[in-house]
Amino acid sequence: MKFYLGTHVVNHIEKTDIPLFISYRQLRNRKKPFNQICKLAIDSGGFSELKLNGKWSITPEEYIDNLHRFQDELGLSIDWAAQQDWMVEPFMIKKTGLSIEDHQQKTLDNYLTLIDMNPSVEIIPVLQGWELKDYYQHFDLFESHGVNLRKLKTVGVGSVCRRQGTNQIDHIMQSLNNKGIDIHGFGVKTSGLSKYANALQSADSLAWSFGARYSKAHCSIHKEKHQTKNCANCLNYALEWREKVLKASKS
Image (cartoon, rainbow, N blue to C red; front, side, top):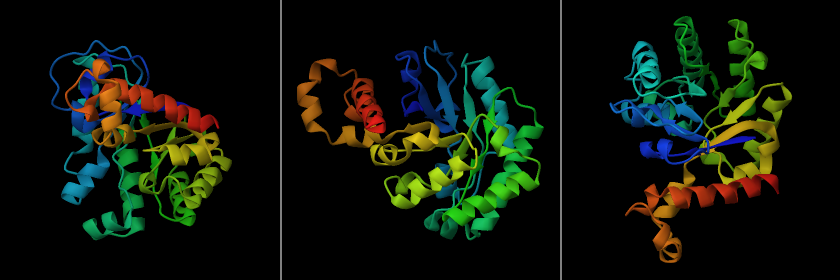
């Protein structure tokens, strides 16, 4: 399993060679080119978009144009970028006023639109659901429109990050993996990896930043190693946290 360390600090791209996962929202206003030394995957920022707006305010054309700009002007090499999907957590469904099926259809439509643009960046589709039957339903919807998910290098599984350690998500991930899908798990925490790391091709998490914000013990022990005033931005803390996560995934 390839583990992308989530970060909201863009200059981490120039400070570590471990794989990073960063939101499109963090990069879109960047003007200065990077001296990149790491592998990089990009999150579309869909959770923030829907939570703030109840819809996508960024058009597919704008999204692809900026991904190309990240490559051409910022000098970024991108493993892949997630599509502009529609999450289906109950509070998100309430926010948009739509149904799970509506969100699934919009997610499919967006993926087809992005792929039709023939982007130079690999765009990965995202399966959305709440119950296992929902994910199967979305899988079938993709397949009915000619998208063979089993043949793609990476397929994201969404609406799981707040349920990581549950047996329900373990069952969902194992079941989708048994369908022959190479899964990326979004926001997978230690509790999730300890259950179903074997079902994942890759995963990411930014959970270290929240923990660092309240870790006074780390600050007192590692003060000489800190590169930032705010521990929630500290790459050294993040790298130590990543090592613990990877150990948990192998236990």
